[in-house]
Image 1 (cartoon, rainbow, N blue to C red):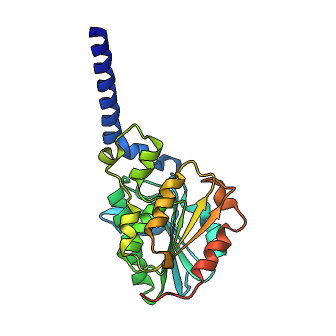
Image 2: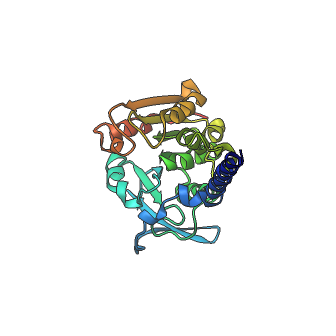
Image 3: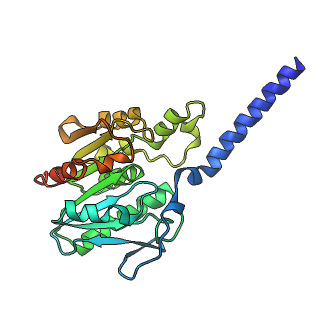
Length: 262
């Protein structure tokens, strides 16, 4: 009996230690800026948000419409730059490295990324006051894009391999952890999109093992049917999706639709 009690106590202590590790180290478990570090360029877009200098790129300058792109967790700003410029020639495109990523300063967190994204949107509105501002977000960036669309006017929103919340993703990957109670970096896209009045396109990867299908399905179910469109890439995974021949044309066709009224 004593051995059983000792074993049980060790299991409880070990489980508690694991939960504490997840709670206190979750930012290092969620964000991967170390894979995106680059040297600042002289022609970088620079934006100061809450005292932190953020850097990125501006593509196709001088166009009448604007497009914000928020990439995936380990995606560098330059990774999609050429493809974006070709796919959206009538948009001036703004790409900003998340704080702590690329050549941007600071340390990433949900609230910091959300605040920086709104600062970028407001900066673009100052630079192009008459422009329509559309938004694309991929993977982690879909959570950032969803927040922007819930706080600002976004006629066309594209979410690539999105989730309803990062908490749900955590629950699906680690059902033996109380993710709902441990996670502070929640990225609750379903909740944030409740006030979005524009159109939304969701791109799903049929073989995605990073964002479970149930998390994407829950987000889709939360969106008004009349204002959402879903395109499935059944044979692609979380990474290969962007190499599909119809990936960029699908987004371009959606964003080129007439601007909806709010």
